[in-house]
Image (tube, rainbow, N blue to C red; front, top):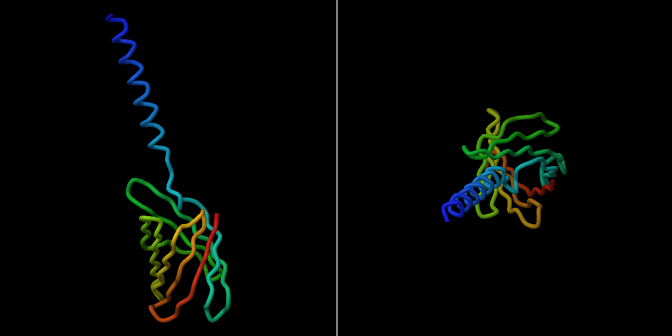
Amino acid sequence: MRRFAVVSALCILALGVTLYGQDKTKTSPIEGTWNCVAHGGENGDVPFTLYLAHSSEGYTGTVSAPQGDTDLTTVTFKDNQLKITIDTGDHNYTLNATLDSGKLAGEWAADSQKKGSWEGKK
């Protein structure tokens, strides 16, 4: 009887360790590299790449565009809604998008004046 209790306890412990390891390695659906295009700007369609990462502290990332590379100021993702702000010192950008079927689609604004749409996929 005692042997059964010890074996049962070890099995439960092994299962707990396995589940803990699985939860720890889960990634966010927006984490990774996104190839994107902004529409509606004065220069026509502009390609850019978003690099998004997730950690216990939240989301971080960078954007790479023909104009240069910069860190994202804030990134939030909740209920399939992505919100990004970028403060370059010269301009403030906001990007909002919905994640649907593995694709991002939404709107962007520059200095709250210029606006357009954007989309991205991994």
